[in-house]
Length: 459
Ligand SMILES: Cc1cc2nc3c(=O)[nH]c(=O)nc-3n(C[C@H](O)[C@H](O)[C@H](O)COP(=O)(O)OP(=O)(O)OC[C@H]3O[C@@H](n4cnc5c(N)ncnc54)[C@H](O)[C@@H]3O)c2cc1C
Image 1 (cartoon, rainbow, N blue to C red):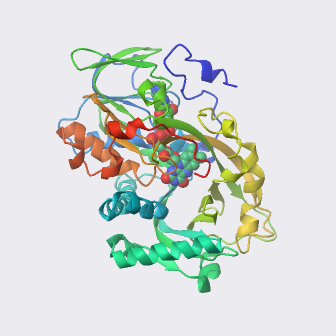
Image 2 (cartoon, helix red, strand yellow):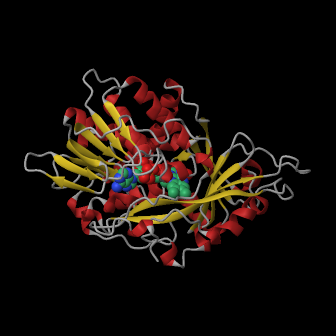
Image 3 (cartoon, rainbow, N blue to C red):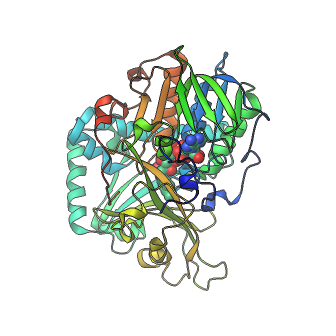
């Protein structure tokens, strides 16, 4: 049944809007002073660029529009809740090459397209590390290796073949992929029963602190940026002169250009995206051992993907304080579609995942068996699925002044920062998508929008 919040905007085309009483993720336990910022008491009446959504997509777009720009546009950033209160403030804090994608893309779109995405993901790691350093963001950014551990023999055999094929194809990103065979898999990964896997360069960070810190830097130096939290956009009406009138409960704004950085919630304000970006509810946890545990667990030295079967996977990062952020556990609720498909209420948790997270460290990691590790935060968040599983980025078809970066499916972090750079380039230089640097398969096209999203219980 829809919650009160889910029916709040029942008079608009779709009622997919962020709810006001969301669960509290671990990442939002230390709030930045700009968390509920309003740059001015009243909304500006007009702006050059209006960005909807203050997650990683929206704030990165603002950053690239303003960075090193001697004639910055006037920007209004509208956020329905608080800064970084959507998926970015609820995720696993993990950026890595999504190795399984590369083979899929290669089969469907060819080697060049696969290479483009792999290098884009790798570059993202370094680009986000660089901006965290340049802007002195206190966000626990750590350059590391992600260990994609495979626990199923047949899955491992298939993965070995993919790796061999990538070597033969001479793909240049393969230099960064380290294949680990069965001989040393358990010892190197620390995962009991590991059949093998790959390691790739990765970045882990505190995503809320990255986004709120970056936005705070922009506000310090950019008078042309106006941020308004607790200001949901309810509808957008295109005018004949090419501008758009953006409606909110606090008034309207006329904008030259709009950027939709609303990910799983996009359909709420762009009804054309119904069934094209579908909100999906997923689960994440923070796990730690008691400080006085007689058997303190070892500090993990990698970030991880744990593939139990080809269709069941967890991901986790170690925190510098010894705790762990772990997400996944889909197998525990995937058969009950109404819990997660086309769901946008993150005010409740997916309780079925709790027992899995309570025991995931003890079951899988050497040295954690008697640690007493337990879940101390469990929360939910909303991602956006697309029909083909890839993000939708660029100019909204048929809308000259509307741009979008959304629909990252399970993995936005390895794509968003540089996609936002590409969107900003399209706006700043009136550049074509093909000059934006965004991988070709992410381009939003009418053809891609013809297909509807189907439930994918394993992702
Ligand atoms: C539990 C969980 C774990 C995840 N783990 C990982 C991971 O480890 N690695 C990874 O790569 N990805 C992960 N993801 C996915 C990743 O977090 C997302 O792809 C990414 O954060 C999307 O960023 P965004 O800025 O586009 O969207 P969001 O962060 O969701 O931001 C969109 C913003 O738009 C606002 N908004 C929506 N509608 C309106 C409106 N009408 N008016 C005004 N504002 C509006 C929302 O309130 C929200 O703040 C995870 C996601 C979840 C939920």
